[in-house]
Each structure stands twice: as C-alpha cells, then as structure tokens.
Length: 111
Image (tube, rainbow, N blue to C red; front, side, top):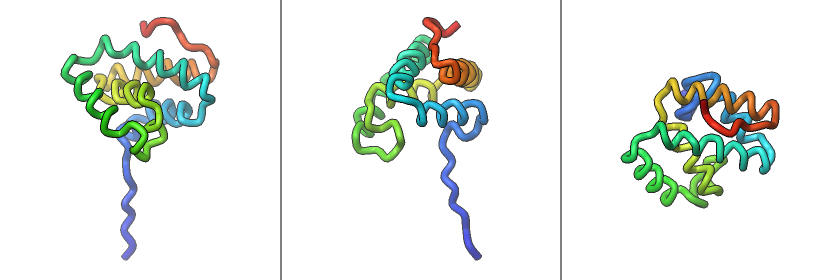
C-alpha cells in the first residue's frame, strides 16, 4: 500500500490565500517588492508578541530555508505577518493581493 504524504502549507487551507501566494511566488521581482510593502502594512493588525516571533523566524530561515521566499528577509517577514494575522485579515489581504497582482497596481493603504 502506497501512502501519500502531501505536505500542507499553512495557506493551503484557504483557496483565495493559496491562489494569492502562488501568484505572488510566480510574480516578477518588481511585483514582489510592491507586494512586500503591501503585506507589511498588516503589522498594525498583528500583536507585538507575534512580531517578535516573526523576527526570530526571519533570523532562523533567512537564506537557509527551502520555501520560495526564504532568500528574501523582507518577504519572509511579510509572509509571516500574513500567516499570523487573523483569518479574516488573511482573506481580505489575499483578495486585495490577487487584485493588485492581476492589475499590477498596489493600493497605498490596506483599507
């Protein structure tokens, strides 16, 4: 009997979030730069203790992890902020990220 060990990523649970991050992964470097800034604005919605944990994760994985964003410390921080946000905030951000990536235009605020 063959067992399937499909690894689920934290964002695979929400199809919109999954699509947004997959599209981000495939985006140009310029689009990724704009997306990082956009996602980093979520810091205001994430608790201080979570932010401290995120900095620990950045230090741990920067340049040595095997995730598509581990070679960019700012992207690690942006993705970890998104991962630790409330699911409603994640979904709202994912929808905005999808639209922004498709239109190649990022909003100046997260309202």
